[in-house]
Image 1 (cartoon, rainbow, N blue to C red):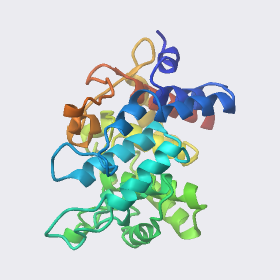
Image 2: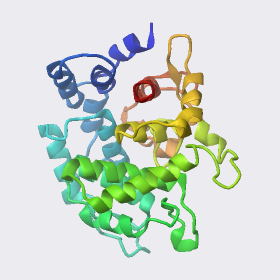
Image 3: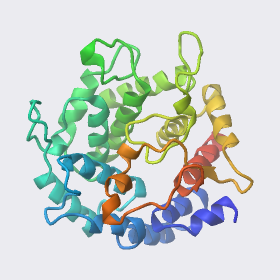
Image 4: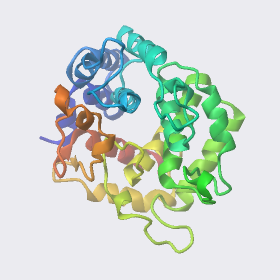
Length: 314
């Protein structure tokens, strides 16, 4: 089965995005399929695993982390934030989820108020903005934490003076989602554009100083990505931000092309189990049916729309 047919036969979370991004389906058809995310397949299964207070948990102290991962996954699935299911779910998280770290000053703070690490706060902004929560305070903090090279780094408070690909991509995704939700501001747009230049100047993969590959993990495509950067995630951000592709993304694009099998499908690589909600909830019967080394619906979807963005942009 060719890649597009394979995606269109997949779970509603994948199918609606393939319809929107890779076909000429009508807006009505796309919306109808998107509405199924909350009521069928992966999305419905994930929503059904909440406790009575609306949080996700498997009997461990890190309830807020599992809840954040679940919200990120629902956002990646594209669950309609205006749906009754999504509004009810997020209201319960807003009212009941707090950070738990007795040694930290943010202990007991509501999850949507954020904490201190920009890689975490970037993801809180992403899901908060997507689901209609006020995360303006976190955005203002992130703007003040941008580094001289345009990036962000969770190790800045420990003396780091250079940006990190990992932290920067989390912040960029959050700022973009906030712009979409609020209309943005000149300050947010300027910071985001400086941040994306940080990636582009390094050709999405390489050190600015000597051109060496920063980390072989950047060439392996994970999903869900969690806090980790890889080239496909970076390209997906540029596509979503409407950046016009130039020669600086060419190597990363060729890397994406090289991953495809004879049917155009792209495998799951380097899974980060600590960042996977289905791994965290493995005792509660939730899973995305994806296996390392085998064709991945998510990576195939993301790769196909990145390649389409690149060809159209040229």
